[in-house]
Length: 45
Image (tube, rainbow, N blue to C red; front, side):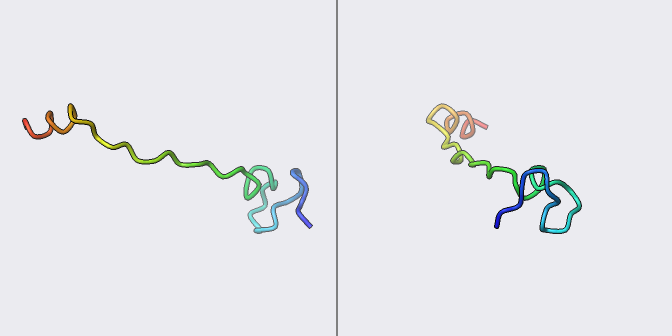
C-alpha cells in the first residue's frame, strides 16, 4: 500500500513522503544539439 502524502517516508529519512520519495520525477530535456552558428563560432576560436 502506498503511504499517504503526509505520512513519514518509508525510506527512513524522517521527512514527509511528499517531500522525499513522493516527489514526481522530473523529466530531463534532451541535450541541446549545437547549430551551424554555434559550431562556426567554436571553429573560429
